[in-house]
Length: 258
Image 1 (cartoon, rainbow, N blue to C red):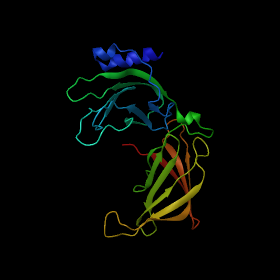
Image 2: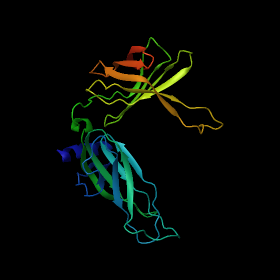
Image 3: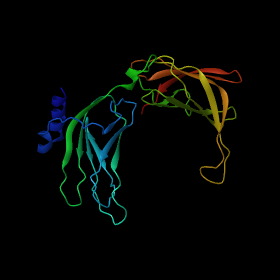
Image 4: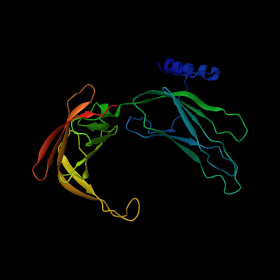
């Protein structure tokens, strides 16, 4: 299956040399973590051929569909320093969605020499981090901007990573009409709702520089809960907030779309 997948990806790249390349096995010990999930920051660790003064040059990573190609920078002689013991080049591939991928690495030639391929179309898989979690796990990504269309000028920013760590910022107005910012970090209770957690009011006194040197103060202003009602598209929900003065509101929110 991998060879068919790799060959199809290779043919789509449009070059004869690449289209004729079949999948090769991924060399051991260069991909970290070895069995990546969608929550991992994937890195490639490659040895550098070095027999004299050494300089690590910038690399380039490009991606077409599920095919990743890494071009290593040239090895440049320098007049200072020698070859470090066991030099390695760490290349950041970032976080990838769950799926099957191929990886091609072009070697780092000396200036003026033609590029060559270290290995081509090596297959690897990224598993779904959420599917590996114990229940409750969240099967939708609620990251985005949310608001109540009937209350313009107020809304929520929600950040949710692949491991379902979540940060929410609520921008609204205080009773005196001034803008106020609250933040909370809810844990998930079910696939669509969070536990009730502290709502923090963030404040910072102005200073002579930007940003000001004064520290940010966080005051517990109440509690907050999120509950999403449209399970298929994750476009609707309810934001329940209870302030310390006893005022409680259930705000119907929708994902902001242009």
